[in-house]
Image (cartoon, rainbow, N blue to C red; front, side, top):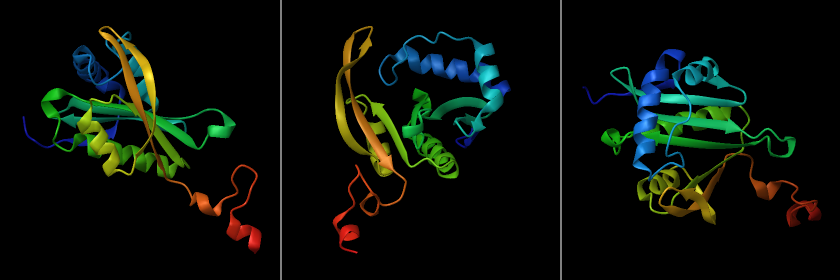
Length: 186
């Protein structure tokens, strides 16, 4: 295998390779919520027919046409939070530390920018230092902790809530029905 990889929207023909990669990461039981993947390749073939649309994107990182990482980003459907998206991602263990996570996240943020997303949020396990460092490099900040949020096969896991603001400067906006002090003086 070469060390080169590429990131693109998932295609139906990626379903089997994606499922293999997803199952390998899930079996680790450490970095993603899923420990057992309930869907088969047909489910993902159908899902990947529309992998870059207004409501979300599903991207894959490929090396030699094998999926080695993935990110799925989705816009919230409620009108009050339609400007918010959340995502989940993984990189197979043999390919971590090679820039794949950065490439996937960069492309997901590009999708967000072209679809009016102003805030992206995620949760991450506190022991996932590499992922937390990656998210911080992209401007994500910790906003809280969800205590015993995930019930895994081995016990409960806290999750750290992180988010990045991509929208206009909040100081210049009307917030909570009150204007900022500068706007009130004008």
